[in-house]
Amino acid sequence: MKSCGSKVLICVSIALCSLCGLPALANPATPDPDLRAFLERTINDASSFADRFEAEVWLIDMEHRLKPLVANRAQRFNILRTAHQEAHRMELPPELILALIEVESAFDRFAVSRAGAQGLMQVMPFWKQEIGRPADNLTQVETNLRYGTAILAHYLKRENGNLHRALARYNGSLGKNWYPQRVFTTWRRRWYTGDLAIQTGAVTAGN
Image 1 (cartoon, rainbow, N blue to C red):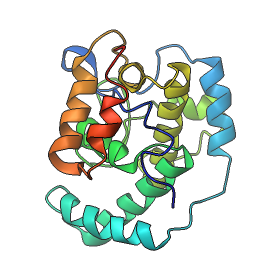
Image 2: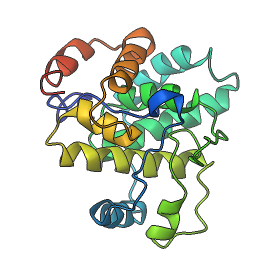
Image 3: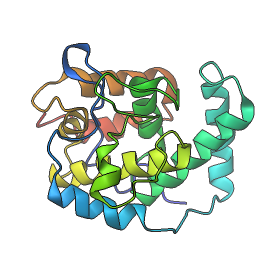
Image 4: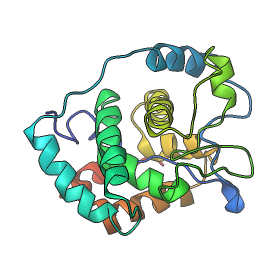
């Protein structure tokens, strides 16, 4: 299994909640053609990550941390397995994705923002039309996390590995610092695994 910080040490910051208390958009108001093309390739990719022994150790650790937020054990493991799989597919730290989900939806897969963003990672439903998959259900854990992690990975690439800016762009608050800091604080408080200091140190410059 790849180290969670292997290819993302240069980027550790996502932005998901909206400015002035508005719900997270996770997408621009106007569809980005580059992001649309990336999403179309990613969402249609049926490949999946096979959990190895290290992933199972990670699952046991994270399941204990998630318990206060998700009462049902089967649901906890489903969220964690999917987060682990999709994060690694996009070469993102799975703990970062968990922190982002906590900030965005508090792990409520049926959450809907005032702007219409849906699910765990608060994905805007217009992306389904943009990539020709109108039947996709964004309340499903697997679908929502595949969209959300792909969107974040795209913004991270666009921002040349600057996670602060990628998170802010995901949240629709580019140029603001509060949202990336909220995600980082959540990461430190609940999802810290020992790599955070190294990872965040690599990206705090150039907010």
